[in-house]
Length: 101
Image (cartoon, rainbow, N blue to C red):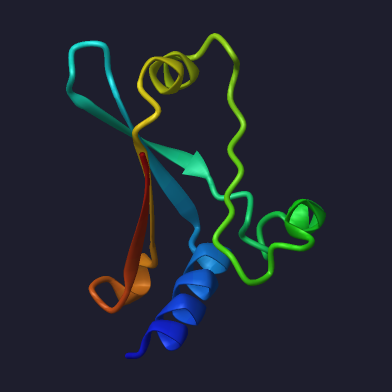
């Protein structure tokens, strides 16, 4: 699969996966992973499609959480985080992760 085809497949996965898994680093240095609502999933959240206007060609994601949550505290302390999208029905066929540094 060439780079362009891979990018298209990743974007389709991000737009259709039922959930996204966010991993942050806790204060103890260990990773913390939790399932998040995949707001880019068009079928589940059709009213959120407008959030991605102008981002049809990229892999932008949005999450919502309380500002006092562990997730927000962990990202503020260490911005290294990963988002994992997968399609359980096609497990192993294509999975995608984005890492921020």
